Image 1 (tube, rainbow, N blue to C red):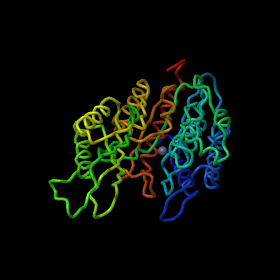
Image 2: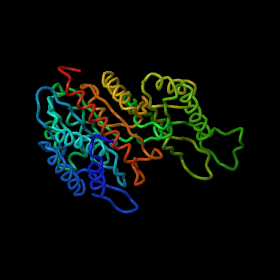
Image 3: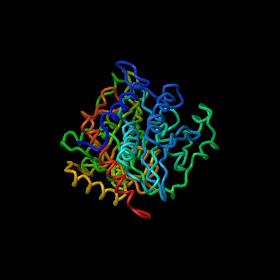
Image 4: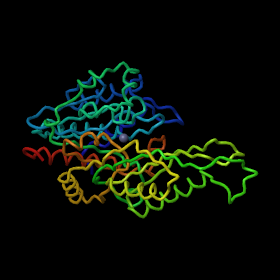
Length: 393
Ligand SMILES: [Zn+2]
């Protein structure tokens, strides 16, 4: 028996999921479009029905507040989608937060701390840049790449600056999200207690060889850049696997020059991306391959440190799971979330529920109702526990 009102949560999820939905394609709610605005109005109504006082900041973050004394307990996630996305990614965390507040009020619970539920805008990064809304809210750095996109949507840096909140007023940040991977389902776990979000490095790699005639150059006289690139990529994968079971390596783009069927490749460019809970092992993999191959030139262009969840909140999550008999496991998140912008300044916690077949960013995204309710119950218990805390965590 769940504590939250599962039927109501499910109803909100499916109703919001229909806003921007196209059959066979999925749900598309890109920020600064009519579909997004309609979705946000829907969520704002849900917040008001739950007794939250709402406001929208200049970049479009929707904030619902239940007044109280002292530091704010914040529950957040996003309500934008990728093009042709699912109905759970982001929205589940926001609507669960609203449901927790509504249920607590119905049960006559008197909150001590203020509780805030926030629907951040533009987490997916298809319009301005990844986690833009929560970046603005937390005063995170707005990357150069985002600036031209701001102007396209009539936004100024002044407006972005006006969104910034004083994070010292926050006790904690909680985010409940679908896993977007298949680990929990494969291991029959109900909850993922997340240690943090992995760091990322991306390199632009160039492998040089010598372009030449594909017919008249015998194999032993060739200097084929693509053959060399293949060996390098295989090595990258092998060294990633050897380095850590948590590390992942992806080469998702590769260009061959000059790119003709009858010319031996003279140059290959590809991008390698590594993700891992810590930075050093990734640097080691890259360095070892660069050292070994003088024909390879690498230029790092993205370096994003990992985010750690609060050890106190991890412990609390584990205790609450044990008390409820929930099957859980600790894990790292390979995907980015709004929590990345909070983790540095405010004790933060990310919780996952299983995703069917590990699929997300797709019309096929699905999480079972019992898992949805279980996660929201856990969130509600967590809010109650944190509400009893005095002072800083
Ligand atoms: Zn998300």
